[in-house]
Length: 489
Image (cartoon, helix red, strand yellow):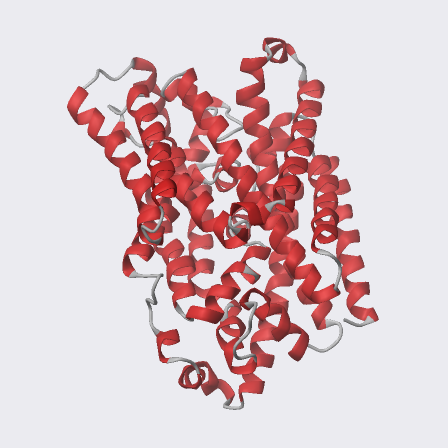
């Protein structure tokens, strides 16, 4: 990296600080801090929803899979998200926005006390917070690896640097800081991604046809839609997981819909995000697919994207790329921190400390900022110990994805009237059964990625839906009223 690259990165950090300060003056209450007061424009919400699905892990863990296994990386990740988002668009996204408009929720788990009961809400809140500690920790570890590759700084220093910057701007600006950083991140990512795409295409030497002829120079299985261990079963498991994740089971993504002014706006935001997932990763991942041609037999495939960038990008553009990697990771982690803070502030602390319910707007805003700060500190500690949990790929795929189903199924299906007979007992059985299945599969080992991912999900779905058919419990009036309220605009 040259001087101009470092200048661009410094300018990026200054912009982030500026976003934090600007957003600070837009936040007057916890509702502004957590949901932008329900005034998030649909196009900004859609871009933010899309960008919040990226992080430095895409350019480390996913780049590693693209290097070793090829096109299947796009198939099981981006393509399954785009397909899964169809269900989100039709059934889920509008209901999140209506939920805020009708009930005034500020966190994704806030409605669960009414839909089920307080024990279910608390179990889901605590489980979700713990899972997110691991997920965000993996993303800090990924950005530390990237900074080590590009700038030569120790991984621990990179984790601390990115964490401290995020601590500053998200604690100041809340959701407004998140989505504005997402928008800036998207612009930087598109600019750097298009440049990287064109430069790699030029070095392949076949002009525009290189998009297709490149695969002849790679191992034959790299052009396959499925490549073991990323089989059809694995992709199908991820398709279902992605439906629950991108519908709002990943809580920061639910916040994008909750913060929309209306159900129609939330639906348009979901459509925009789905289109971006279908198209943009094909361009973004192209250099990752091509990497084995230029760097064969890498001992550390997770460094493939950074090596490609340093090989082909001229001074200045390399700095822009590093800034884009920073911005995507920071936007995702700050988004998670903001949403987890809303769950802790709105759902966990008021149960633990009753006097919080008597706090005024200023005190609640202070609590929100303190919980956000504390959560980020804990995730940084997890990042320092990422290898203990199976490294970046292990944390993202084996831990977060496998645990997502048991936590998100009662939350997402609980929004739909078709599952109104699945009450608090069904939700508790679903969560506990899914978590126990995850533990058993981890202890047994050797079951394969598809089973490891799908097992907890299938168990949770079976228990949640099956109990309602067997028990045939009466639907409480409060549940009927809630579902009727969010069923129409």
